[in-house]
Every structure is written in C-alpha cells, then in structure tokens.
Image (tube, rainbow, N blue to C red; front, side):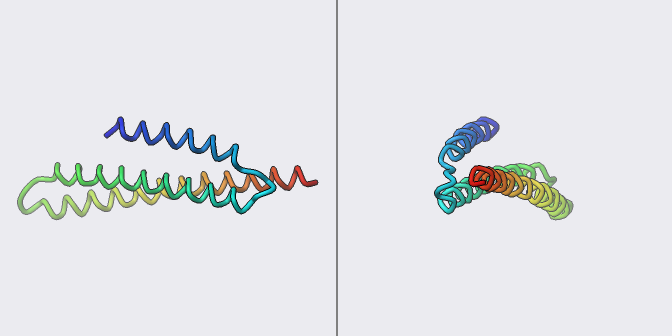
Length: 109
C-alpha cells in the first residue's frame, strides 16, 4: 500500500506543477476549475487510502465479544484522522487559489 501512496504522491506533485503552469490570470475560471479538479482528485485518493487502512485495522480487532467495540474505536480514530487530512488538503488548495488571485491582482496593478 505504501508504494501506491508514493505513486499517487508523485502523480499529484507532477499534476500540481502542471496546473501552476496552466493557471493563467487571463483565464481565472479555467484556473479555478483546474485547482478544483486537483483538490477533488487528491481528496478521493486520500480517502481511498484511509478507508483501506481502516479495513486493515478492523482485521486486527479480536474476534468475539470485543470485536464490535474495537471496530467502533478504530472507525472513530480513522474518521477523526480523515477529517484532519481532508481539511489540510482543502486548506492547501485554498492557499493555492489565494496566491494565484493575489498574483493576478498584483500583475494587473
């Protein structure tokens, strides 16, 4: 699983650098659209990775009477982690858009 995460990271890094080249102040709506697609792609990839890790954790829960409680704890732990991770991804792309808009305003002045 770590290798797939690494591949996703490399692809996203390449895609982000490509998107920055495509962020043209003359076409701000297109730039926003590219950033939105990038953010959605990263969120979906991170969510899939998080979900797979949660299911692996469920597999480590004991059988029997403690299984349900263990799965609930793991689910709560992974949901909290996912919410933090998703917020960080959204913040990263909000910052990217904000910097783009500032750059465009500065170049227009």
